Length: 308
Image (cartoon, rainbow, N blue to C red; front, side):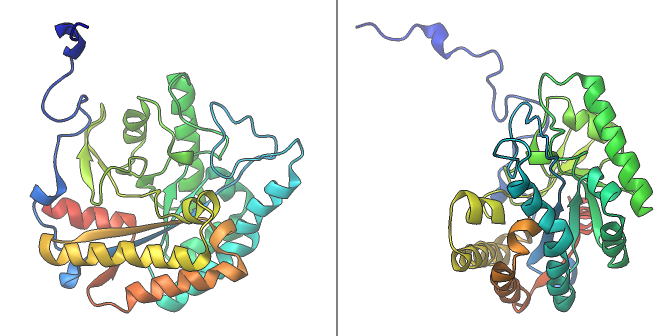
């Protein structure tokens, strides 16, 4: 048996670090420590997703989490998703208001069109609005013509800016879907930070053809869909895992500088009456600890950029 030929290990992009130029290779423990306001260890970032799933979803090139499942018309799943915007988010708002939390809502443009009262409720609470694409059936992917993707982004930004009367600084693609062009296109549209990449616990700078943007930590491992729906864990386990995530980050921050505790939520999941208590339990655990700064994504971005 002969060994592998030398060319097997040859790779034209091989170099120290990454095999692309979007960002520089950087290990978190070696970076400059970040200080949050008032010496806080944790920036607590709460991000409920306000989504609209069309009942006649094409699911191209894949079905996003929460997509319709059965034959048309899939009213069972459509109405459950609709529950989040009709009922669940209002229950969550009451919890967030009671704790005095700053919130960033990731909103589909279709939600702003279909639920203007919901937009007003977010704006009245001074929530930040993050662009969450056109709707949950308009995904971004390699193979989508660049001009079509550009139009999707432009439509999303125009609708959300008009509906809120505010600048839109953050972007979360539906299902975190991206083409190779997505970072360039959202930066060209005026976006300053993106939540699609899940490879860090802290913000980091990314390069685009339209200048730098910032990748923000927005983990999928501990969001409610992953834990409660995909992994079939209990509500008590959901609360426990959120608390465990927070405790480790809080401990690390005491030795290495500030950390971000980002919590991605879906009102059709956690806004259910039997689940809201688990969320409140976990948030209470965090807000009762010293050194916690409740902030929007833009506030975290500005503080980080001023130091990084």
